[in-house]
Length: 264
Image 1 (cartoon, one colour):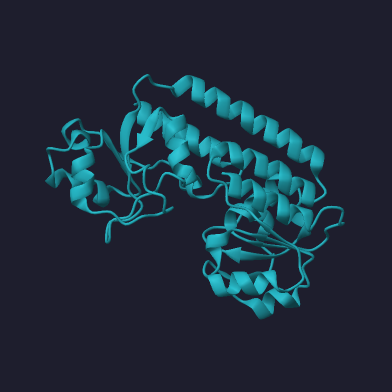
Image 2 (cartoon, one colour):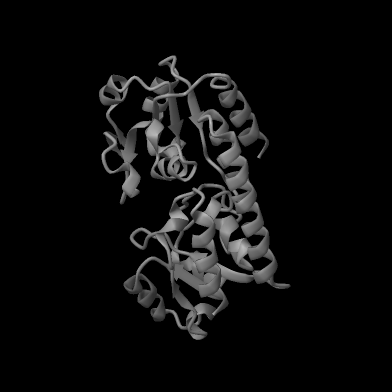
């Protein structure tokens, strides 16, 4: 966490005091956040990945997730780049840092960090009042969800990202924090990688009480192991909202829907 705040402070320093007019966003979640802050007019380029907000339908593309078109980005002459580290490869991240263009790196590991990030990005975009207001609303909503869904003994949850090979989320991933808001605990919260590969045997050993996955066939496959508590109790649940994968302001309502599913 200390390293996260140091990165935010150092990178924010490079763009403070500048009148930002041309912004390139290198993550769908960051593009979404710019729209939520009422600053879509500043976006001159976005990295695509999934469906765009309607407000960004005509904004030029600078590539897709993991495939940044650097030449196209430079042609747009941005005065601020918003970067999610995982959206581009290490070599291109280093190249971006050498362009003499301010780069704001955003990678929240918790929902509280997300609310702080909303406010920090709003400052860089020249929308400080909007940022403070939105951050306050998000913090209030987060506190409400924690109060409503807290449990004395959290439910043990396996969150399945993919099945072949089997991937989940680690303890430093923001979805893991979302589970804690819902009165649950990620059974792989001891793993530090954001998306670690795990074995079926390790899932069986940790015996989750709930299994969450993105589609029904992935859930149905777990019925082959009736000894797992989640299978025995019929707690094989679909992830209700893709918004969990986009850490922007909308994620709080996606978390609320997740909490409702787990509570049922």
